[in-house]
Length: 500
Ligand SMILES: Cc1cc2nc3c(=O)[nH]c(=O)nc-3n(C[C@H](O)[C@H](O)[C@H](O)COP(=O)(O)OP(=O)(O)OC[C@H]3O[C@@H](n4cnc5c(N)ncnc54)[C@H](O)[C@@H]3O)c2cc1C
Ligand SMILES: NC(=O)C1=CN([C@@H]2O[C@H](COP(=O)(O)OP(=O)(O)OC[C@H]3O[C@@H](n4cnc5c(N)ncnc54)[C@H](OP(=O)(O)O)[C@@H]3O)[C@@H](O)[C@H]2O)C=CC1
Ligand SMILES: Nc1ccccc1C(=O)C[C@H](N)C(=O)O
Image (cartoon, rainbow, N blue to C red; front, side):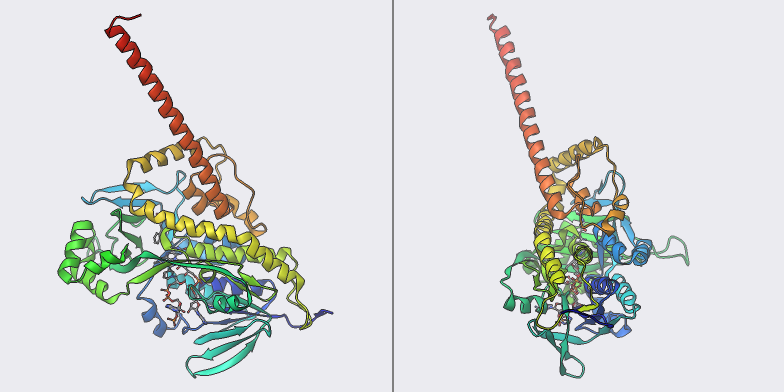
């Protein structure tokens, strides 16, 4: 017999990244007592900040991530929105340094540059302001026994090991997840990990001088764009920061980086490929960053299922690490939390009810099974969209065909009488995972980035159908043009030779 206790059951969240923090808030809101275990030191301490500053300074948050935060903590979503830098389109820098702005959305919707550390610290602070949430920093989870519902935790500072009991374990421990690896021992998990042949290095573009003496520093590029230097097989991008700097990232094949062996070659390569960016970054700073910052790998991870019985689930990068090219990795991870939150609630999981040790919590098991079954298609679609967007960013944006398709997409989109923005769809997402198939023509970018009511897989399927329609239209138009041309030629020939 299950018993209704006076204390809630205990959930452990492994990882205090943004996904772990939001998951902890969601569980606390649902009535669980929550302990977060984080291998690294508390990121809010000044001593932790220097290490964090070396990589991934900012990221793009868009409607899916914001809708997820809104569903769990509306005040935090409002706070983030007031601090972000909106980017309303891509700014393409060609090899001659000429600029071309390509808006993301016909109605002016934006993606938003936000400081990664700020976002994470704010979510952590918010989580820890909830009395039922506790965090253990520098506590690395090393093993988990899901059948006895215990995990081994190493206190990194004291080098002490402890065994921690739990009722429900949420893995939000990133791409190299220990929770995922431990789950593989008890679950027949399909798992695929793929390193792509490209790597990345981050560089800093400093703020510009004030326009008047004693004034504030200025941005060296337009801050309301995501800047791209597409060079077909590689690219440079830049996202703005609040301190008027830009974080630039070079993405290139390993062999391209391997050729950059000396300072002279690095500067020459930069000068040849990104002539307008080089003076803004500065040669000295470029070389310093090139030598000091890590050259990091890029990978994609797909897994299925994401849960085990009534006691464990993986969320965020631990379940679906994706290449960063759509700017959706974190948005998708935060969306995982929203989807799970709704399924737990819909299935009637009650953290105050303690099933006996020998029995499973049927509602929780069912919610987790529904999560794995319904989420997989979307996570695979998100990973694949991310791969495809690399080709779009580094190559397609420079082609006439792409611009023609974009113009046609927007023309057909303008015939869509239903003008829905991310803001309009947030309310239903507090209680529903996604809404049914949307009608009318919608560009892929709009669906993925600005329509959190449309799942990734629905967006991808709709895009494929729309592409098919355009292909047929192109063939029909080509046929009509060819037909008209041949009739015209025939009539000219007839007239030339004076035949009836
Ligand atoms: C270059 C780059 C740019 C990106 N840009 C964007 C973007 O613009 N927009 C976007 O949406 N996404 C972006 N992403 C993806 C985004 O960074 C990730 O999806 C996101 O950080 C995942 O969050 P998470 O909370 O799942 O994992 P993480 O942020 O990795 O957090 C995991 C946490 O778990 C802790 N941990 C790990 N193992 C253990 C253990 N054994 N015990 C205890 N704690 C542990 C780690 O210390 C860490 O704090 C980008 C990624 C890269 C690489
Ligand atoms: N999809 C992709 O291509 C990429 C995704 N990312 C993701 O972006 C997020 C933030 O990046 P960032 O902070 O730079 O992440 P990091 O790669 O620095 O570290 C994230 C976590 O993974 C652990 N880790 C790192 N490398 C390994 C490894 N080779 N084997 C085992 N564990 C490892 C780290 O452990 P420790 O603290 O002990 O160092 C840390 O716990 C993370 O979610 C990361 O997963 C990052 C790079 C590429
Ligand atoms: N944040 C990123 C990080 C790395 C690479 C791309 C992004 C993007 O956000 C790309 C944007 N969605 C675009 O399609 O232009």
